[in-house]
Image (cartoon, rainbow, N blue to C red; front, top):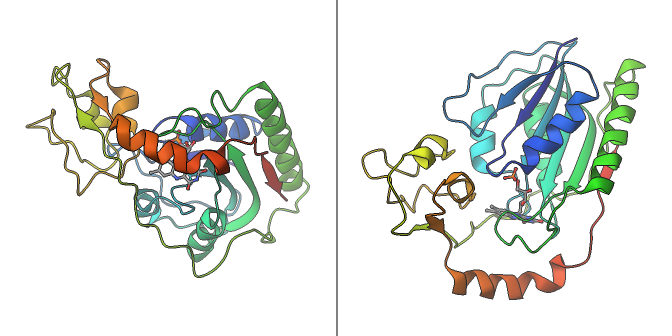
Length: 252
Ligand SMILES: Cc1cc2nc3c(=O)[nH]c(=O)nc-3n(C[C@H](O)[C@H](O)[C@H](O)COP(=O)(O)O)c2cc1C
């Protein structure tokens, strides 16, 4: 059995959580779908276990993550679906991920919805996953490991969400560039969708940008920012839904 920790994780929370779960299986291979230069693992086999993690964007799987997985061939490999969200809601993200992987011949054997700090509005779920989350997620990983080891790996699970999926209209918050930008190019390489041109690293192609906030997270000079006023307006609108602590969930 080979284990893969596969994640699309522009600001690192999904990666952290996928690695925590995959680590419970022993050695695993990491597949980073957010890197445009990542080596793509495509063909899996029935004995393989794939922990597949995506963040929820507007209650959906980010289109860029789906695009990176479009050539996957599951060949009945077991998939552990992992959706990470910023304490608002994940709505149709789990079923969309399930449908996508079943279509590619994976067997979805377990799923997790986990809360992490909101990557745009950092005051929501600030500091999560925290110690309590990590303990809980480690326990989920052990339970999933035992389910698969006991040979009960291959029946699909019941997940929340509705079909047709909720429409995703995008987020109108695109990072802009401040004068501290030294054109070092870190964000050019690491933008998951190539929205920052190599020839002009102090700009952004707003049509390509998916508002994932990776450029802000990786900029060594803090030269990328989202508009404060727009951020405050969005934060006020989300406050009621995002402020109460939501708990992680395991579907086995
Ligand atoms: C464009 C965008 C849309 C998001 N939409 C939602 C959402 O609908 N519900 C929610 O709870 N969190 C939402 N979030 C927060 C992320 O799901 C959350 O912060 C996640 O941990 C980010 O994963 P990452 O650190 O791996 O990039 C959104 C974040 C971004 C950037």
